[in-house]
Amino acid sequence: MEFLVMPEFRDRTAVVTGAAQGIGLVTAMGFLRNGARVLAVDRDEEAIADALTDFLGEFSGRVEFLKCDLSDPRQIEDCCLKILERANEIDVLVNNAGLGNWKRLEERTVEEWDEVINVNLRAPYLMVRYLLPGLLEGAAVVNIASTRALMSEADTEPYSASKGGLLALTHSLAVSLASRKIRVNAISPGWIEVSAYKKRKERRIPVLREIDHLQHPAGRVGKPEDVANSVLFLCSEKSAFITGTNLVVDGGMTIKMIYAE
Ligand code: NAP
Image (cartoon, rainbow, N blue to C red; front, side, top):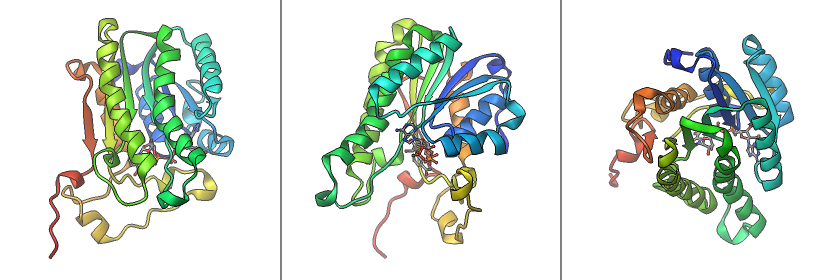
């Protein structure tokens, strides 16, 4: 896996949520490869154990998992207090954890709606709120949204709404935190194939058809490091003039105009 080489992250502290699998795991690896310390947050104990054994062993001195269910505000507050006990200064916060609920709207319960909104939208807000004492001048926050914030398939209402809200939260936080010199940006991934970075019992070699790749103007389906490298860039000083924005990382899928044949 190839990551941007960014020595500025050496000995910096990055907090990454949903870091036991997928994009969050690979993003954590991107910071670790660049010498950072990573405080990783996830709720899935099995995934945490597998990630530590299978992917993060070489970084064992610099990565630490905190178990937290991000749908629960009390657990988020406790988790952030623990993070602040371990690190006085936080340089990077990546709000990556997220989930969907693909269901016909007449079948979806209020609890299912709430869970998606609470994890995908409320948790990023609360993570910033409770970590604020540690987010000092120069810190960067990246919220992982989705191209589904901008376009939809059927039956995805809470996911799309949460990710659209996350883009609005991003520019709102960017303005609120500007006086503290904290930048806040979002990344909207398109199709990112994460099956090789799941916990063992869900891990698969990706099976992708030629048409899956070719429908992307970039000619291929996305990899988790496409997102991780974008996160590294948005957290680095190379992006010092960028705040409140949404970087679409989708191989061009959302700019493609589609007409019936
Ligand atoms: P993933 O492989 O499912 O990993 C997400 C991790 O977050 C999982 O370990 C998951 O644990 C954890 N998580 C979910 N709910 C949580 C909660 N309440 N508390 C703590 N941890 C929780 O997902 P991914 O595909 O890497 O996606 C990462 C982010 O990118 C998400 O925000 C997603 O919406 C966004 N995204 C992904 C794609 C894509 O194509 N992969 C495209 C656009 C946007 P559980 O296994 O227990 O749920």
